[in-house]
Length: 423
Ligand code: SF4
Ligand code: SF4
Image (cartoon, rainbow, N blue to C red; front, side, top):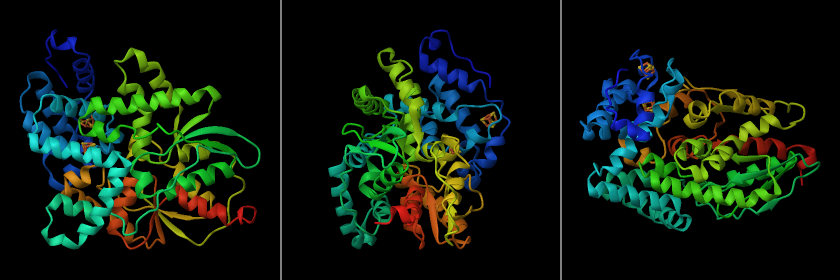
């Protein structure tokens, strides 16, 4: 794509980055065929190519800010377009630049800005989120009288309340010690489904990993970044980097994420701090050391394949694992290794609609994508749905009758059935 930035504009490193991304797009339109928002509405401005064009105009001249905002808000940030694009257009980083620029320019109405800030505060502070969950469950009975966004939030809440779980700081390896890993406990997941962290610790320690958790290794910053709050995202990431550096004196082999939405953010720390020389090298190193839990399991000795468990699992590929981290086959191979039959829905590359705060901020579209995904999963007749991200698990869990679990919980169950692990 041809661009026409002035030399003065090019003094800004973000503009130089935007230009380098924009110039890679050759308008071929291949990405339209795999973009969920284009497929439902057929509006070019809700396609990757359309959004790229709108952003180009905005970056060059400041024109069309409101349009850019509207169509970026409708984007799921799923990354399906990046997987499809033959030219390697880095759409997600371009969208991040667009969102940050819009937020800095104060384009959004003040009321909406405050609502997004409140949402961010609620989701990333455990005590607030826990109180919000309790209130949400209580207000579910008022359904008819609630504003649409609040109603959507309450509908997504799991039926059952999770007890708070404190994962110990050090979890010793069982048997021969093979690795020392830092487990990222996250923010939303540890409140919504703390059993995922417990299952991860059990699986990894059984396989010879010492699992360390860090008090100040909290929210990865992804929620803030996707809302255009880049400064807040970097503040959270800096706190995490400091916590990891302080703990690295004893050495560790990997940082493990079991929420792919967080994993992709951690793997992107090098990019997030591209202009901060004081922290850039550490951020890049941490990004390189981060693995999704499935990637770590692939590196460990798993023993011989488990016998068939007679359980059919429908695998829901989360976008942040599938498109963002390019981890496609490993989770399915792991589930098969542990004795599960694995099936996949039609259009596995399309987003389930949860997409972080999208489910709350764009409830109608989110619901449409979720319903479609749930239908495609239901026809498979599976006993359980497995995914690698808390967003998919929460959204689909609210829309389906079969249980929706993290794949590590299924692996934990399979391991627990081995005679050597039975209590
Ligand atoms: S990130 Fe997803 S929704 Fe957004 S433009 Fe790309 S394919 Fe479409
Ligand atoms: S597939 Fe890539 S190069 Fe083609 S229009 Fe989409 S973003 Fe541009």
